[in-house]
Length: 519
Image 1 (cartoon, rainbow, N blue to C red):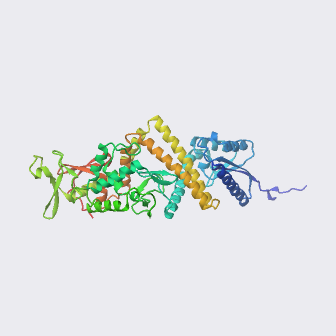
Image 2: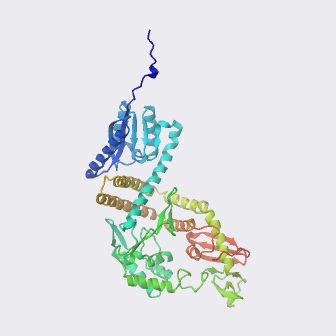
Image 3: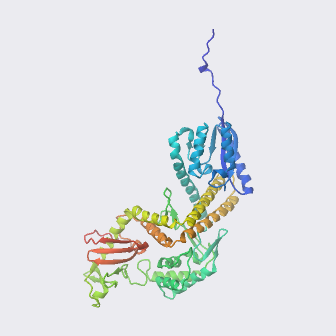
């Protein structure tokens, strides 16, 4: 009798039947190109991994939406899995496979029960190595990583376009329309811009210009109802109006939660001359800058004297502003009405340095707790703003469309990086998608702006953005002070009440012994 030890016989390697799932362009011409590229990619993948036998490539259109019921090829893939034709599925990323978390979870469980594993290349996640409990938490985790990946690719795309001078803008400034990726002068709004420059050069202050426009009922964009000092300041200092562009004034943070921040030197900026049609001449724009500089607007409140506190400090009794007085080299501020003997207000006198130090203490606290204070307030306002059923549904649909278009842009960028798309085709397709996204973002902003709280939310976000770059313990910053403080009420010689942009009111005790933080 012969006994053979079969455990020592060479075992034949089992071939794993592989299916690839992808999404391709919705345009018929691009679709063939994209599908061919996907087939080449997965055929090459099969060649590099001999344990796999490619069964088929399943490709749905890029604009099939978030509902899996609309994805014919994905449904065919699931049917073939149920018929036992497939052992493993490979796909580029979670967003290529599903956008709806609930349906993603159902699909993952279905494949798990059928003994079919799925591998997401970008996230490096293999469902074969996950238990059911991990499957429950996977969609959110993967979606977060996908958001990071998409943002990173879009950021790189914008960066390259800015470096080459091709990037124009995401949303046109007042006075312009964005048509086919190019800024075009909108004459009715351009007339308002020219008038603002004319009034300013005639000596009219920014707040007075805003008052004139408000009194005449001159409309703003996106259903905004009022003009403000900051709005006029933005116009006077926007180089777009003389035909140039400073790119990357703001940037998006690299990690979640993504936030827009003012570029204070963290990222490079690019200046492009003659980037778009001008509304005012360079001579008019430069004249406005020279007038602004002569008034020292960047270091004091316009038309209000030579000091940052001029016109800011107010008496709670008579409502008059405070005036500056220097005694033995120390600057003090006191009620102008009381000082002139015109009122019988209680005597109030505060040291200038004490006001600056007290502002720093208030800003330190606000910056340290801005997420709890501002973040919560902004979120609550946005929730209230979006309670309108029609508005909420509209915004949700726009968000879905933007997500789909962003995913398409990502695919195009990868095809270009991999050499499948040449630079000309990439630029053309990317420009078309970017224009659609920009248009949708404008529609979303209009939908949000239909609510009267939109201006308040915008202002609070500006305050939050400023405080995001504020370092607690830093020296007194006159620029930040002028940016966020509307006025200060001198409650008494021991307390100040700060009235900030966005309607916030905070009271802080004056610390006469506070360390000197002024630069």
